[in-house]
Length: 272
Image 1: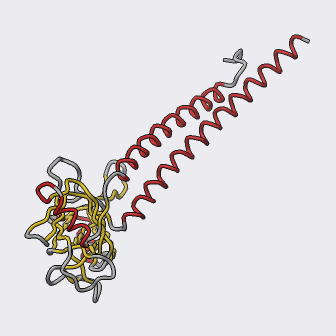
Image 2: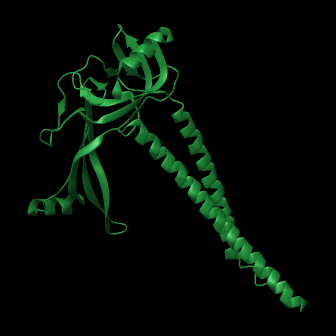
Image 3: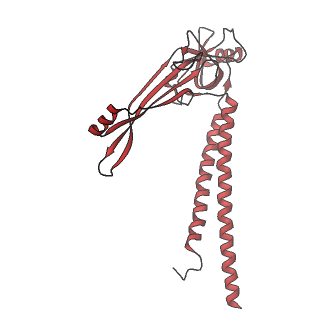
């Protein structure tokens, strides 16, 4: 090991830089392909233009498009259970208990969660064009709970600490367990929020448009933002991988050039 002209750690560092550069370049190329596919998806709003396109399409159906609009409940919206005057069309309420139990081998208290509960409900809703409050044109969202995507907004979160009384202390000594906290949260797809849905759109009865899961196997996605912001986020991700590719690649090249320069310098000194 002492006869090596180059420190092994330097060799590992150069190799790691090129390896990470290759990995980041692969991720950049994958993100670029995904971004290209997203930009090829037609984007519509719930308006007369979408109706005309559907009427001119075979079977009055568009296989995979993006529809951007504001969330509007078809009937009575869901009221938040914790926040006054907060309404939505999809609601998820979660709760779980945090406990600690005594580990006799390590003689420490270890944590665990239990009694986790989750309830998800929805009411029928549609997408309407921004700025239009009374309209006959809307896109009904079919079976939104089948869609993927992080489209819910957390409107409430609370962690309640357990109170330690004399009875609890006695129970801890007998069972080796003690409650720590109860965690509760509520998430909503709020009325009036911007939503972009990716899926199949069909026209029924001449005016009723419906967004639903595609029949060709592609993903039914709901995104809690407008289409432009969604694309910008993917472009930022692609640029991040591109920058990391350049940084790690340049780092590897710089270190390798320095190593070669030092080796050549040593050879010249020996020849003299």
